[in-house]
Length: 580
Image (cartoon, rainbow, N blue to C red; front, side):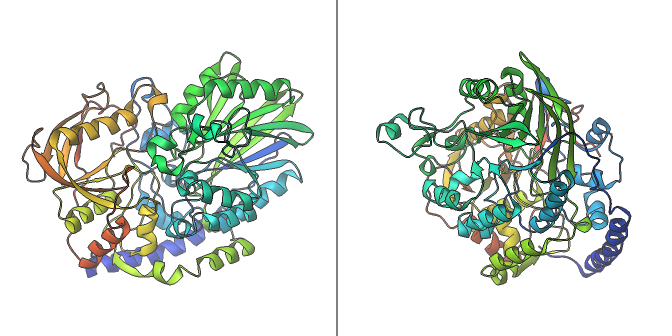
Protein backbone atom coordinates (compact mmCIF):
# COMPACT_ATOMS: atom_id res chain seq x y z
CA UNK A 1 0.00 0.00 0.00
CA UNK A 2 2.07 2.92 -1.25
CA UNK A 3 1.47 6.34 -2.76
CA UNK A 4 3.68 8.09 -5.28
CA UNK A 5 5.09 11.44 -4.16
CA UNK A 6 3.25 13.34 -6.91
CA UNK A 7 -0.08 11.80 -5.82
CA UNK A 8 0.68 12.45 -2.17
CA UNK A 9 1.28 16.16 -2.79
CA UNK A 10 -2.00 16.33 -4.69
CA UNK A 11 -3.80 14.62 -1.82
CA UNK A 12 -2.12 16.81 0.78
CA UNK A 13 -3.31 19.88 -1.08
CA UNK A 14 -6.84 18.49 -1.13
CA UNK A 15 -6.72 17.92 2.63
CA UNK A 16 -5.62 21.52 3.27
CA UNK A 17 -8.34 22.83 0.99
CA UNK A 18 -10.93 20.54 2.60
CA UNK A 19 -10.33 22.16 5.99
CA UNK A 20 -11.16 25.60 4.58
CA UNK A 21 -14.18 24.29 2.69
CA UNK A 22 -15.51 22.41 5.72
CA UNK A 23 -15.21 25.42 8.00
CA UNK A 24 -16.93 27.68 5.49
CA UNK A 25 -19.72 25.17 4.93
CA UNK A 26 -20.17 24.69 8.69
CA UNK A 27 -20.53 28.43 9.24
CA UNK A 28 -23.27 28.59 6.62
CA UNK A 29 -25.20 25.60 8.02
CA UNK A 30 -25.07 26.15 11.77
CA UNK A 31 -28.88 26.03 12.06
CA UNK A 32 -29.40 22.71 10.27
CA UNK A 33 -30.46 21.03 13.55
CA UNK A 34 -33.06 23.66 14.45
CA UNK A 35 -36.20 21.53 14.10
CA UNK A 36 -39.72 22.93 14.24
CA UNK A 37 -41.74 21.76 17.22
CA UNK A 38 -44.30 19.09 16.44
CA UNK A 39 -46.53 16.97 18.66
CA UNK A 40 -46.06 16.16 22.33
CA UNK A 41 -43.49 13.32 22.38
CA UNK A 42 -40.08 12.80 20.78
CA UNK A 43 -38.27 9.49 20.27
CA UNK A 44 -34.60 9.60 19.28
CA UNK A 45 -33.22 6.50 17.56
CA UNK A 46 -29.67 5.40 16.83
CA UNK A 47 -28.50 1.97 15.68
CA UNK A 48 -25.53 -0.05 14.45
CA UNK A 49 -22.88 2.37 15.72
CA UNK A 50 -20.48 -0.57 15.99
CA UNK A 51 -18.58 1.05 18.88
CA UNK A 52 -17.37 3.97 16.77
CA UNK A 53 -16.79 6.57 19.47
CA UNK A 54 -14.94 8.95 17.14
CA UNK A 55 -16.21 10.63 13.94
CA UNK A 56 -15.73 8.46 10.86
CA UNK A 57 -15.81 8.30 7.11
CA UNK A 58 -18.27 5.69 5.88
CA UNK A 59 -19.09 5.26 2.20
CA UNK A 60 -22.64 4.11 1.49
CA UNK A 61 -23.09 1.26 -1.03
CA UNK A 62 -22.95 1.53 -4.78
CA UNK A 63 -24.66 -1.88 -5.04
CA UNK A 64 -27.73 -2.72 -2.93
CA UNK A 65 -29.89 -4.86 -5.18
CA UNK A 66 -33.57 -5.44 -4.59
CA UNK A 67 -34.94 -8.62 -6.14
CA UNK A 68 -38.51 -9.48 -7.18
CA UNK A 69 -41.08 -7.32 -5.42
CA UNK A 70 -38.33 -5.31 -3.71
CA UNK A 71 -36.65 -4.14 -6.92
CA UNK A 72 -36.66 -0.36 -7.12
CA UNK A 73 -38.03 0.08 -3.62
CA UNK A 74 -36.31 1.37 -0.49
CA UNK A 75 -33.90 0.32 0.86
CA UNK A 76 -32.70 -1.05 -2.48
CA UNK A 77 -31.85 2.24 -4.15
CA UNK A 78 -28.41 3.75 -4.58
CA UNK A 79 -26.80 6.76 -6.19
CA UNK A 80 -28.95 8.90 -8.45
CA UNK A 81 -32.03 6.70 -7.98
CA UNK A 82 -31.81 7.27 -4.22
CA UNK A 83 -31.53 11.04 -4.64
CA UNK A 84 -34.51 11.13 -7.00
CA UNK A 85 -36.70 8.97 -4.75
CA UNK A 86 -36.10 11.11 -1.66
CA UNK A 87 -35.80 14.52 -3.30
CA UNK A 88 -32.16 15.13 -2.35
CA UNK A 89 -30.12 17.59 -4.38
CA UNK A 90 -26.96 16.21 -5.99
CA UNK A 91 -23.68 17.64 -4.69
CA UNK A 92 -25.33 18.49 -1.36
CA UNK A 93 -24.31 17.51 2.15
CA UNK A 94 -27.21 15.06 2.29
CA UNK A 95 -26.15 13.49 -1.02
CA UNK A 96 -22.72 12.89 0.53
CA UNK A 97 -24.17 11.43 3.72
CA UNK A 98 -26.78 9.16 2.09
CA UNK A 99 -25.07 7.94 -1.11
CA UNK A 100 -21.74 6.88 -2.59
CA UNK A 101 -21.81 9.61 -5.27
CA UNK A 102 -18.62 11.72 -5.42
CA UNK A 103 -17.71 10.35 -2.01
CA UNK A 104 -14.11 11.55 -1.92
CA UNK A 105 -15.12 15.02 -3.08
CA UNK A 106 -17.89 15.11 -0.47
CA UNK A 107 -15.56 13.93 2.27
CA UNK A 108 -13.17 16.78 1.55
CA UNK A 109 -16.02 19.27 1.62
CA UNK A 110 -18.22 18.04 4.47
CA UNK A 111 -15.86 16.04 6.67
CA UNK A 112 -16.48 13.11 8.99
CA UNK A 113 -19.77 12.12 10.56
CA UNK A 114 -20.78 10.74 13.92
CA UNK A 115 -18.73 10.52 17.09
CA UNK A 116 -20.28 10.06 20.51
CA UNK A 117 -19.17 13.48 21.78
CA UNK A 118 -20.94 15.08 18.82
CA UNK A 119 -23.95 12.80 19.20
CA UNK A 120 -24.18 13.78 22.85
CA UNK A 121 -24.32 17.47 21.91
CA UNK A 122 -27.04 16.83 19.33
CA UNK A 123 -29.10 14.54 21.54
CA UNK A 124 -29.01 16.94 24.47
CA UNK A 125 -30.09 19.74 22.16
CA UNK A 126 -33.00 17.76 20.71
CA UNK A 127 -34.09 16.67 24.18
CA UNK A 128 -33.93 20.22 25.45
CA UNK A 129 -35.99 21.51 22.54
CA UNK A 130 -39.05 19.52 23.65
CA UNK A 131 -38.68 19.90 27.40
CA UNK A 132 -38.08 17.61 30.33
CA UNK A 133 -39.76 14.20 30.24
CA UNK A 134 -40.89 14.45 26.61
CA UNK A 135 -38.03 12.59 24.85
CA UNK A 136 -36.87 8.97 24.80
CA UNK A 137 -33.49 7.75 23.44
CA UNK A 138 -33.41 4.23 21.97
CA UNK A 139 -30.55 2.15 20.53
CA UNK A 140 -31.24 -0.59 18.00
CA UNK A 141 -28.24 -2.81 18.76
CA UNK A 142 -24.72 -3.47 17.46
CA UNK A 143 -23.61 -0.85 19.94
CA UNK A 144 -20.84 -2.76 21.71
CA UNK A 145 -18.87 -4.29 18.80
CA UNK A 146 -16.81 -3.02 15.89
CA UNK A 147 -13.48 -1.72 17.23
CA UNK A 148 -10.38 -3.22 18.77
CA UNK A 149 -11.08 -1.31 21.97
CA UNK A 150 -14.61 -2.69 22.29
CA UNK A 151 -13.35 -6.19 21.51
CA UNK A 152 -10.64 -5.96 24.18
CA UNK A 153 -13.07 -4.70 26.84
CA UNK A 154 -15.91 -7.02 25.71
CA UNK A 155 -18.07 -3.96 25.16
CA UNK A 156 -17.71 -2.48 28.65
CA UNK A 157 -16.31 0.79 27.27
CA UNK A 158 -19.51 1.22 25.27
CA UNK A 159 -21.67 0.69 28.34
CA UNK A 160 -20.04 3.74 29.91
CA UNK A 161 -20.61 5.78 26.75
CA UNK A 162 -24.23 4.59 26.48
CA UNK A 163 -24.91 5.57 30.09
CA UNK A 164 -23.50 9.06 29.60
CA UNK A 165 -25.43 9.43 26.35
CA UNK A 166 -28.59 8.51 28.25
CA UNK A 167 -29.81 5.52 26.24
CA UNK A 168 -33.02 4.36 27.91
CA UNK A 169 -33.54 1.09 26.02
CA UNK A 170 -31.65 -1.05 23.54
CA UNK A 171 -31.79 -4.45 21.86
CA UNK A 172 -28.94 -6.58 20.56
CA UNK A 173 -27.08 -8.55 17.92
CA UNK A 174 -23.26 -8.59 18.03
CA UNK A 175 -23.60 -8.01 21.77
CA UNK A 176 -24.43 -11.71 22.05
CA UNK A 177 -21.07 -12.73 20.57
CA UNK A 178 -19.32 -11.80 23.81
CA UNK A 179 -21.16 -14.70 25.44
CA UNK A 180 -23.75 -14.78 28.21
CA UNK A 181 -21.40 -14.02 31.12
CA UNK A 182 -19.95 -10.86 29.53
CA UNK A 183 -23.37 -9.78 28.27
CA UNK A 184 -24.96 -10.03 31.70
CA UNK A 185 -21.99 -8.33 33.36
CA UNK A 186 -22.38 -5.37 31.00
CA UNK A 187 -26.15 -5.25 31.50
CA UNK A 188 -25.67 -5.00 35.26
CA UNK A 189 -23.89 -1.69 34.64
CA UNK A 190 -26.18 -0.46 31.85
CA UNK A 191 -28.62 2.10 33.23
CA UNK A 192 -31.23 1.52 30.54
CA UNK A 193 -33.33 -1.53 29.65
CA UNK A 194 -32.21 -4.39 27.40
CA UNK A 195 -35.31 -5.52 25.49
CA UNK A 196 -35.67 -8.70 23.42
CA UNK A 197 -39.11 -10.27 23.07
CA UNK A 198 -37.81 -12.98 20.71
CA UNK A 199 -35.11 -14.69 22.81
CA UNK A 200 -36.19 -17.80 24.73
CA UNK A 201 -34.52 -20.58 26.71
CA UNK A 202 -33.96 -23.90 24.99
CA UNK A 203 -35.98 -26.79 26.40
CA UNK A 204 -32.89 -28.20 28.10
CA UNK A 205 -31.92 -24.84 29.61
CA UNK A 206 -35.46 -24.32 30.89
CA UNK A 207 -35.46 -27.80 32.43
CA UNK A 208 -32.20 -26.92 34.20
CA UNK A 209 -33.68 -23.64 35.53
CA UNK A 210 -31.35 -21.41 33.52
CA UNK A 211 -31.61 -17.71 34.24
CA UNK A 212 -34.52 -15.99 32.52
CA UNK A 213 -36.56 -12.82 32.86
CA UNK A 214 -39.76 -14.89 32.91
CA UNK A 215 -39.28 -18.55 33.83
CA UNK A 216 -42.89 -19.42 33.01
CA UNK A 217 -42.64 -18.37 29.36
CA UNK A 218 -38.91 -18.97 29.01
CA UNK A 219 -38.26 -15.41 27.89
CA UNK A 220 -34.63 -14.62 28.63
CA UNK A 221 -34.93 -10.84 28.61
CA UNK A 222 -37.55 -8.22 29.33
CA UNK A 223 -39.69 -7.96 26.17
CA UNK A 224 -40.97 -4.39 26.44
CA UNK A 225 -41.40 -1.27 28.51
CA UNK A 226 -44.09 1.38 28.82
CA UNK A 227 -42.91 4.96 29.21
CA UNK A 228 -45.09 7.95 30.04
CA UNK A 229 -44.20 10.86 27.78
CA UNK A 230 -46.13 14.10 27.94
CA UNK A 231 -49.00 12.46 29.79
CA UNK A 232 -49.33 9.61 27.27
CA UNK A 233 -48.18 5.99 27.35
CA UNK A 234 -45.62 4.84 24.78
CA UNK A 235 -44.80 1.12 24.60
CA UNK A 236 -41.42 0.00 23.23
CA UNK A 237 -40.84 -3.65 22.26
CA UNK A 238 -37.36 -5.02 21.67
CA UNK A 239 -36.67 -7.33 18.72
CA UNK A 240 -33.13 -8.75 18.78
CA UNK A 241 -31.43 -10.15 15.68
CA UNK A 242 -33.43 -13.33 14.94
CA UNK A 243 -30.58 -15.48 13.57
CA UNK A 244 -27.79 -15.18 16.16
CA UNK A 245 -27.04 -18.94 16.50
CA UNK A 246 -26.99 -19.35 12.70
CA UNK A 247 -24.91 -16.31 11.74
CA UNK A 248 -22.47 -16.73 14.64
CA UNK A 249 -20.96 -19.64 16.59
CA UNK A 250 -23.64 -21.42 18.59
CA UNK A 251 -21.21 -21.74 21.53
CA UNK A 252 -21.79 -18.07 22.43
CA UNK A 253 -25.52 -18.61 23.15
CA UNK A 254 -25.97 -22.36 23.79
CA UNK A 255 -28.97 -21.96 26.11
CA UNK A 256 -30.99 -19.55 23.98
CA UNK A 257 -33.18 -19.78 20.91
CA UNK A 258 -33.99 -16.83 18.67
CA UNK A 259 -36.32 -16.20 15.74
CA UNK A 260 -38.73 -13.59 14.41
CA UNK A 261 -41.50 -14.92 16.71
CA UNK A 262 -44.46 -13.32 14.95
CA UNK A 263 -47.10 -15.03 17.09
CA UNK A 264 -45.47 -14.05 20.39
CA UNK A 265 -45.00 -10.51 19.09
CA UNK A 266 -48.68 -10.19 18.17
CA UNK A 267 -49.74 -11.36 21.63
CA UNK A 268 -47.38 -8.84 23.21
CA UNK A 269 -48.69 -5.97 21.07
CA UNK A 270 -52.30 -6.90 21.88
CA UNK A 271 -51.52 -6.96 25.60
CA UNK A 272 -49.81 -3.58 25.49
CA UNK A 273 -52.81 -2.11 23.66
CA UNK A 274 -55.57 -3.71 25.69
CA UNK A 275 -54.10 -4.20 29.15
CA UNK A 276 -51.44 -1.51 29.44
CA UNK A 277 -53.51 1.02 27.50
CA UNK A 278 -50.60 2.11 25.33
CA UNK A 279 -51.32 5.14 23.16
CA UNK A 280 -48.48 4.22 20.82
CA UNK A 281 -46.53 1.00 20.17
CA UNK A 282 -42.98 1.16 18.80
CA UNK A 283 -40.91 -1.87 17.75
CA UNK A 284 -37.18 -1.36 18.35
CA UNK A 285 -35.94 -3.85 15.80
CA UNK A 286 -32.70 -5.45 14.68
CA UNK A 287 -34.38 -7.58 12.01
CA UNK A 288 -33.12 -5.76 8.93
CA UNK A 289 -35.32 -3.54 6.80
CA UNK A 290 -36.72 -6.12 4.35
CA UNK A 291 -37.75 -8.33 7.27
CA UNK A 292 -39.33 -5.36 9.03
CA UNK A 293 -41.34 -4.48 5.93
CA UNK A 294 -42.79 -7.99 5.76
CA UNK A 295 -43.37 -8.09 9.52
CA UNK A 296 -45.22 -4.77 9.35
CA UNK A 297 -47.64 -6.24 6.80
CA UNK A 298 -48.49 -9.20 9.04
CA UNK A 299 -48.55 -7.94 12.66
CA UNK A 300 -51.27 -5.44 13.56
CA UNK A 301 -51.07 -2.73 16.17
CA UNK A 302 -47.47 -1.55 15.75
CA UNK A 303 -47.36 2.15 14.91
CA UNK A 304 -43.68 2.53 14.04
CA UNK A 305 -40.77 0.15 13.52
CA UNK A 306 -37.42 1.74 14.32
CA UNK A 307 -35.18 -0.63 12.40
CA UNK A 308 -31.53 -1.60 12.23
CA UNK A 309 -29.11 -4.39 11.25
CA UNK A 310 -28.92 -3.83 7.49
CA UNK A 311 -27.31 -0.36 7.86
CA UNK A 312 -29.81 1.21 5.48
CA UNK A 313 -30.09 4.98 5.90
CA UNK A 314 -33.63 5.85 4.81
CA UNK A 315 -34.63 9.54 5.11
CA UNK A 316 -38.39 8.98 5.15
CA UNK A 317 -40.53 6.22 6.72
CA UNK A 318 -42.10 3.61 4.46
CA UNK A 319 -45.84 3.14 5.01
CA UNK A 320 -47.01 -0.48 5.16
CA UNK A 321 -50.66 -1.58 5.25
CA UNK A 322 -51.72 -4.45 7.51
CA UNK A 323 -55.01 -5.90 8.88
CA UNK A 324 -55.00 -3.40 11.74
CA UNK A 325 -54.20 -0.25 9.79
CA UNK A 326 -50.74 1.04 8.85
CA UNK A 327 -47.22 0.78 10.24
CA UNK A 328 -44.33 3.13 9.48
CA UNK A 329 -40.99 1.40 8.89
CA UNK A 330 -37.65 3.18 9.27
CA UNK A 331 -33.96 2.27 9.29
CA UNK A 332 -31.32 4.60 10.71
CA UNK A 333 -28.01 3.78 9.04
CA UNK A 334 -24.84 2.91 10.91
CA UNK A 335 -21.58 3.97 12.53
CA UNK A 336 -23.11 6.92 14.37
CA UNK A 337 -23.63 8.75 11.06
CA UNK A 338 -27.34 9.34 11.65
CA UNK A 339 -29.85 10.06 14.38
CA UNK A 340 -33.53 9.36 13.81
CA UNK A 341 -35.99 11.90 15.23
CA UNK A 342 -39.56 10.65 15.57
CA UNK A 343 -41.98 13.34 16.73
CA UNK A 344 -45.43 12.09 17.71
CA UNK A 345 -48.70 13.89 18.30
CA UNK A 346 -50.22 11.50 20.82
CA UNK A 347 -53.92 11.29 21.68
CA UNK A 348 -55.93 8.84 23.76
CA UNK A 349 -55.21 5.37 22.37
CA UNK A 350 -53.76 6.57 19.10
CA UNK A 351 -51.25 8.73 17.26
CA UNK A 352 -52.74 11.86 15.77
CA UNK A 353 -49.74 12.75 13.63
CA UNK A 354 -46.11 11.86 12.92
CA UNK A 355 -43.03 13.72 11.75
CA UNK A 356 -39.80 11.79 11.13
CA UNK A 357 -36.37 13.00 10.14
CA UNK A 358 -33.13 11.07 9.78
CA UNK A 359 -30.43 13.59 10.59
CA UNK A 360 -26.86 13.13 9.36
CA UNK A 361 -24.52 13.82 12.29
CA UNK A 362 -22.00 16.17 10.69
CA UNK A 363 -19.13 16.53 13.16
CA UNK A 364 -18.19 19.87 11.59
CA UNK A 365 -21.54 21.31 12.70
CA UNK A 366 -21.53 20.06 16.29
CA UNK A 367 -19.17 20.94 19.10
CA UNK A 368 -18.09 17.83 20.99
CA UNK A 369 -19.61 17.47 24.44
CA UNK A 370 -16.74 17.97 26.95
CA UNK A 371 -17.82 15.23 29.37
CA UNK A 372 -18.25 12.65 26.62
CA UNK A 373 -14.95 13.64 25.00
CA UNK A 374 -13.19 13.23 28.36
CA UNK A 375 -14.74 9.78 28.77
CA UNK A 376 -13.66 8.78 25.26
CA UNK A 377 -10.11 10.03 25.76
CA UNK A 378 -9.79 8.25 29.09
CA UNK A 379 -11.17 4.98 27.73
CA UNK A 380 -8.72 5.13 24.84
CA UNK A 381 -5.60 5.65 26.94
CA UNK A 382 -4.63 1.95 27.17
CA UNK A 383 -5.07 1.54 23.39
CA UNK A 384 -3.99 4.91 22.01
CA UNK A 385 -0.33 4.20 21.27
CA UNK A 386 -0.57 0.75 19.63
CA UNK A 387 -3.77 1.60 17.77
CA UNK A 388 -2.35 4.85 16.38
CA UNK A 389 0.77 3.23 14.94
CA UNK A 390 0.98 3.81 11.19
CA UNK A 391 1.27 0.53 9.32
CA UNK A 392 0.91 1.74 5.73
CA UNK A 393 -0.64 4.46 3.59
CA UNK A 394 -3.91 3.92 1.75
CA UNK A 395 -3.25 3.99 -1.98
CA UNK A 396 -6.96 4.34 -2.80
CA UNK A 397 -10.29 4.73 -1.05
CA UNK A 398 -10.73 1.70 1.20
CA UNK A 399 -14.37 0.82 1.88
CA UNK A 400 -16.45 -2.26 2.59
CA UNK A 401 -20.21 -1.66 2.32
CA UNK A 402 -21.89 -3.05 -0.80
CA UNK A 403 -23.43 -6.32 -1.96
CA UNK A 404 -20.12 -7.46 -3.47
CA UNK A 405 -16.40 -6.98 -2.99
CA UNK A 406 -15.25 -3.63 -1.60
CA UNK A 407 -11.66 -2.42 -1.70
CA UNK A 408 -11.13 -3.08 2.02
CA UNK A 409 -12.24 -6.67 1.58
CA UNK A 410 -9.97 -7.03 -1.45
CA UNK A 411 -7.09 -5.98 0.77
CA UNK A 412 -8.04 -8.57 3.41
CA UNK A 413 -8.41 -11.32 0.81
CA UNK A 414 -5.06 -10.46 -0.74
CA UNK A 415 -3.46 -10.61 2.71
CA UNK A 416 -5.01 -14.01 3.41
CA UNK A 417 -3.78 -15.44 0.13
CA UNK A 418 -0.31 -13.97 0.37
CA UNK A 419 0.43 -14.66 4.00
CA UNK A 420 -1.22 -18.09 4.19
CA UNK A 421 -0.05 -19.26 0.75
CA UNK A 422 -3.53 -20.01 -0.58
CA UNK A 423 -4.95 -20.03 -4.10
CA UNK A 424 -8.31 -18.59 -3.01
CA UNK A 425 -9.46 -16.44 -0.09
CA UNK A 426 -12.93 -16.04 1.40
CA UNK A 427 -13.90 -13.16 3.69
CA UNK A 428 -17.34 -12.67 5.31
CA UNK A 429 -19.71 -10.04 3.92
CA UNK A 430 -19.87 -7.96 7.09
CA UNK A 431 -21.50 -4.54 6.66
CA UNK A 432 -19.64 -2.85 9.52
CA UNK A 433 -16.21 -1.33 9.03
CA UNK A 434 -15.31 2.29 8.32
CA UNK A 435 -13.74 3.85 5.22
CA UNK A 436 -10.17 5.13 4.85
CA UNK A 437 -9.46 8.01 2.50
CA UNK A 438 -6.68 7.73 -0.10
CA UNK A 439 -3.36 9.11 1.08
CA UNK A 440 -4.29 8.68 4.73
CA UNK A 441 -2.28 6.53 7.16
CA UNK A 442 -3.62 3.05 7.75
CA UNK A 443 -3.33 2.25 11.46
CA UNK A 444 -3.96 -0.72 13.72
CA UNK A 445 -7.18 1.00 14.75
CA UNK A 446 -8.30 0.99 11.10
CA UNK A 447 -7.47 -2.70 10.67
CA UNK A 448 -9.36 -3.63 13.84
CA UNK A 449 -12.36 -1.56 12.71
CA UNK A 450 -12.71 -4.15 9.91
CA UNK A 451 -11.83 -7.32 11.80
CA UNK A 452 -12.44 -7.02 15.58
CA UNK A 453 -14.65 -9.96 16.51
CA UNK A 454 -14.51 -12.71 19.13
CA UNK A 455 -13.84 -15.45 16.56
CA UNK A 456 -11.14 -13.89 14.32
CA UNK A 457 -9.06 -17.01 13.75
CA UNK A 458 -7.90 -17.68 10.21
CA UNK A 459 -7.87 -21.10 8.57
CA UNK A 460 -6.51 -22.87 5.50
CA UNK A 461 -8.27 -25.91 4.11
CA UNK A 462 -8.86 -27.83 0.93
CA UNK A 463 -12.15 -27.25 -0.88
CA UNK A 464 -13.41 -28.67 -4.15
CA UNK A 465 -14.79 -26.46 -6.88
CA UNK A 466 -18.21 -27.90 -6.11
CA UNK A 467 -17.91 -26.88 -2.44
CA UNK A 468 -16.85 -23.36 -3.42
CA UNK A 469 -19.88 -23.01 -5.67
CA UNK A 470 -22.16 -24.31 -2.92
CA UNK A 471 -20.81 -21.70 -0.48
CA UNK A 472 -21.40 -18.89 -2.97
CA UNK A 473 -24.88 -20.17 -3.80
CA UNK A 474 -25.83 -20.46 -0.14
CA UNK A 475 -24.75 -16.92 0.74
CA UNK A 476 -26.32 -15.59 -2.45
CA UNK A 477 -29.65 -17.18 -1.56
CA UNK A 478 -29.49 -15.55 1.87
CA UNK A 479 -28.85 -12.17 0.28
CA UNK A 480 -31.30 -12.39 -2.64
CA UNK A 481 -34.05 -14.69 -1.40
CA UNK A 482 -37.43 -13.37 -2.50
CA UNK A 483 -38.83 -14.08 0.99
CA UNK A 484 -37.29 -11.59 3.45
CA UNK A 485 -37.76 -14.04 6.33
CA UNK A 486 -35.00 -16.15 4.76
CA UNK A 487 -32.60 -13.22 4.61
CA UNK A 488 -30.15 -12.93 7.49
CA UNK A 489 -28.54 -9.64 6.49
CA UNK A 490 -24.94 -9.07 5.52
CA UNK A 491 -23.55 -8.96 2.01
CA UNK A 492 -22.04 -11.52 -0.36
CA UNK A 493 -18.98 -13.44 0.83
CA UNK A 494 -15.91 -11.65 -0.49
CA UNK A 495 -13.50 -13.60 -2.69
CA UNK A 496 -9.86 -13.30 -3.65
CA UNK A 497 -7.96 -15.28 -6.28
CA UNK A 498 -11.08 -16.16 -8.22
CA UNK A 499 -13.94 -14.62 -10.17
CA UNK A 500 -17.51 -15.67 -10.90
CA UNK A 501 -20.74 -14.58 -12.53
CA UNK A 502 -23.80 -13.89 -10.39
CA UNK A 503 -27.42 -13.74 -11.60
CA UNK A 504 -29.33 -12.47 -8.51
CA UNK A 505 -32.76 -12.85 -10.16
CA UNK A 506 -32.35 -16.58 -10.79
CA UNK A 507 -33.50 -19.29 -8.41
CA UNK A 508 -31.67 -21.02 -5.57
CA UNK A 509 -28.69 -23.03 -6.76
CA UNK A 510 -28.70 -21.35 -10.17
CA UNK A 511 -27.27 -17.90 -9.46
CA UNK A 512 -23.53 -18.66 -9.58
CA UNK A 513 -21.59 -19.68 -12.70
CA UNK A 514 -18.29 -19.27 -14.56
CA UNK A 515 -16.00 -19.73 -11.55
CA UNK A 516 -12.41 -19.03 -12.58
CA UNK A 517 -9.01 -18.68 -10.97
CA UNK A 518 -7.01 -15.49 -11.41
CA UNK A 519 -5.06 -17.11 -14.24
CA UNK A 520 -8.28 -17.56 -16.21
CA UNK A 521 -8.56 -21.31 -15.74
CA UNK A 522 -12.02 -22.63 -14.94
CA UNK A 523 -12.53 -23.92 -11.41
CA UNK A 524 -13.39 -27.62 -11.77
CA UNK A 525 -16.13 -29.13 -9.63
CA UNK A 526 -14.13 -32.23 -8.65
CA UNK A 527 -10.73 -30.59 -8.21
CA UNK A 528 -9.43 -29.43 -4.82
CA UNK A 529 -8.11 -25.93 -4.10
CA UNK A 530 -6.24 -24.41 -1.17
CA UNK A 531 -8.58 -21.86 0.46
CA UNK A 532 -7.88 -19.37 3.27
CA UNK A 533 -10.54 -17.62 5.31
CA UNK A 534 -11.58 -16.32 8.73
CA UNK A 535 -14.59 -15.89 11.04
CA UNK A 536 -15.73 -19.49 10.75
CA UNK A 537 -18.65 -20.55 12.96
CA UNK A 538 -16.58 -23.66 13.72
CA UNK A 539 -13.72 -23.30 16.20
CA UNK A 540 -10.33 -22.71 14.58
CA UNK A 541 -6.76 -22.42 15.86
CA UNK A 542 -5.25 -20.06 13.29
CA UNK A 543 -3.69 -16.63 13.67
CA UNK A 544 -6.17 -13.75 14.24
CA UNK A 545 -7.01 -12.14 10.93
CA UNK A 546 -5.84 -8.70 12.05
CA UNK A 547 -2.32 -10.05 12.57
CA UNK A 548 -2.38 -11.55 9.07
CA UNK A 549 -3.47 -8.24 7.54
CA UNK A 550 -0.88 -6.22 9.49
CA UNK A 551 1.92 -8.61 8.49
CA UNK A 552 0.87 -8.27 4.86
CA UNK A 553 0.76 -4.47 5.01
CA UNK A 554 4.18 -4.26 6.63
CA UNK A 555 5.66 -6.49 3.95
CA UNK A 556 5.00 -3.80 1.34
CA UNK A 557 3.68 -6.38 -1.12
CA UNK A 558 1.64 -5.18 -4.07
CA UNK A 559 -2.13 -5.38 -3.54
CA UNK A 560 -4.51 -6.36 -6.34
CA UNK A 561 -6.31 -3.20 -7.49
CA UNK A 562 -9.02 -4.69 -9.68
CA UNK A 563 -12.43 -3.21 -8.94
CA UNK A 564 -14.36 -6.46 -8.68
CA UNK A 565 -14.13 -10.21 -9.12
CA UNK A 566 -17.85 -10.51 -9.88
CA UNK A 567 -19.73 -10.17 -13.16
CA UNK A 568 -23.40 -9.35 -12.58
CA UNK A 569 -26.05 -10.72 -14.91
CA UNK A 570 -29.62 -9.56 -15.44
CA UNK A 571 -29.52 -6.43 -13.25
CA UNK A 572 -28.55 -3.68 -15.71
CA UNK A 573 -31.85 -1.84 -15.13
CA UNK A 574 -31.88 -2.34 -11.36
CA UNK A 575 -31.77 0.99 -9.45
CA UNK A 576 -29.86 -0.78 -6.69
CA UNK A 577 -26.84 -0.73 -9.01
CA UNK A 578 -25.05 2.59 -9.40
CA UNK A 579 -24.34 3.24 -13.07
CA UNK A 580 -22.19 6.37 -12.63
